[in-house]
Amino acid sequence: MIYNFLFHRVNPKRDKMWDPMDVALFSKCINYITRNFDVVLFEDYMFNNTKKSNKIASIMFDDGYEDNFFYAAPILKTYNCKASFYVVTNSIDKNIPIWTYLIDKLFEKTTKSAINMNFSFLSPKLRVDKLETGEERVRYVRKLKPFLKTISNNQREMIVNRIIETYTDVKITGEMMNWDQLRQLKSDGHYIGSHTLSHPVLGMMQENTSIRDELFFSGEKIKNELGYFPLSISYPVGSCNDTVKKIAEDAGYKIGLAVNQKTCDPDKDDFFEVPRMELYNESWLKTKLRISNKIEKIRRFIS
Image 1 (cartoon, helix red, strand yellow):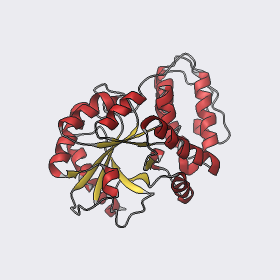
Image 2 (spheres, helix red, strand yellow):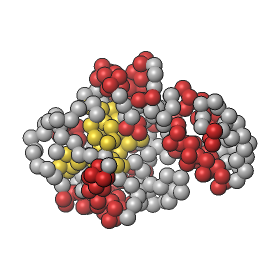
Image 3 (cartoon, helix red, strand yellow):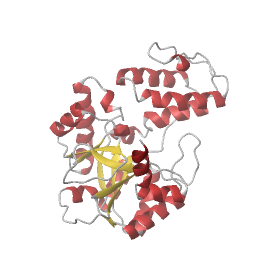
């Protein structure tokens, strides 16, 4: 049994759109996990799981934000803790955040009120042509973003492109690691895996060729930069289905990572739908409950 703990951003700056885990809380998490679990590098453990303890854990990061390098990595070093980092290779190449972060910031920072969101496939409440104030725009994108994860990839791209083409008064760059930083993490004993080319919702993609391109070419980019085709693919937002899992295996991966908020049993679980437990910027009490998986156990019991 292994507890796969998933993180994203770790940063001392607060963000009202998507708050990263505070550095002090992250340090507290790693201190607690290393004292209460036998922490392993996930990719090593999955193919050499000689340890049968119920208190085994791994540390993982999705997306490839630069705060992982500047804030998380030094804390990992303090506790002699290795982690796996799954990166969106187009975002690393271009130093542009993934679409989920990008649209948050465009809606938050623009001063434009007009935007044509009258797409027929949007729910009526999301079809707007004007958002007068910053507060309106923030409320709107908080409703829009979850919806975008439920529609086809082509539809999502149409909406994201409309937002980018409309809010031209905002330029969002930076925030992502570069290949030199990833090489340093690799040199320090961490693992770099794939999180696709562009962070699509794979389970909502309809063209198998496009799914394969997202999986295969991100792996090839990592191979060209770091010297190996990664063992593991982390599915964006944990989205996968049987087709995605089969294409991932055919592309050359050995492991596919979902979320599912539960522990992983390598002897029983599907290697192409490995569960992970995401941690957030919350109170220490709630974080400890998540680490012990008690919140999900209670939720499942109630349901």
